[in-house]
Image (cartoon, helix red, strand yellow):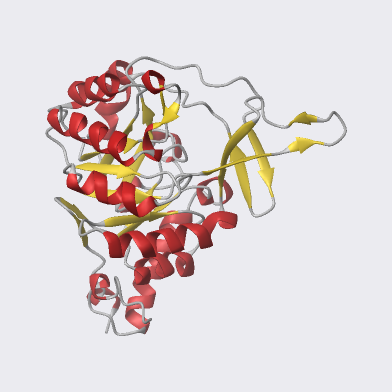
Length: 307
C-alpha cells in the first residue's frame, strides 16, 4: 500500500471529517492563535474556545498550575461572548477548509438556547459542542452534566434553537457517565464527546494556600488518560451515537487506543501546550499506522477492541 491509499476520513453523525483528529476547546484558542504553527486545513476539525451569551472575564489568577503528568486550569470560561465571536472571529474561521465546531455554555437552559440561536444559520460553523460542566444557577449551582435529566433538557433546548449538529461534552465527575450519555442521546444529540476535566486542586506548602485563585480546577493531561479511555469504552457500549474521545492524548499511540476502544474521533487538548504541532504529528502517525498494518480505511480500525 502506498501513502495515498490510507483513507483517514471519518463520519461523526452528520459531520464528515477528513481525519479523526480535532483540537479540543480551550486549548487552541479560536484557531488563528496557532495558525503560524499549524495549518488548520490539515485538521479533521477544530473546537474553538467556549462561547457564552455575554463576555466573561474569567477567574482571578493564578489560573494554571502544572502537575505531575498534567495540568490544572481554572480559567473560568473567559471569552469574548457570542456577538463578538460572530463579528471578530467567524469571518476568518469560515475561510478554513475544516470543520469548525463551536463550544457553547450557559448557566441556565435559556442561556444555552440563546447562544445556540445566535449561531443559527452562521456560515462556517459545522456543529455545536455543548459544555454541560457548568453550574446551573437555578438549581443551586448543581452542574448540569451531573444530572441525566438536566443534561437532556439542555440538549433539547439547544436542538430547538439550532440548525447545526449537536455534540454534548460529558463531565467525568459523575457516578454513572453512561446514564448521562443515554439521556442526551434520547434527547436527540448527534454525538457525545468525553471526557471533560476531572476536578482537582494543589496547595503551596510554604504559604499553605491553594495554588489556584479559584481553589479548584480542571485536571487534564496524561494523568487522566486511563480514566478517559475506560469511560469512552463504557459509553461506546451504552449508546448508538458516535463518541469522540478526549483526555490526555499526547501522541499517535494514545489516539489509537481511543479509536480501538470505539471512539470515532479524538480531540487533542493539553498536548497543544507542550507541542503546538501535536495534532498534525498524530494525523501523520495514524496514516503511517494504517499503511504499516495494511488498513485501507481508518474507520475499519474503530471499535476493534478484543475482549
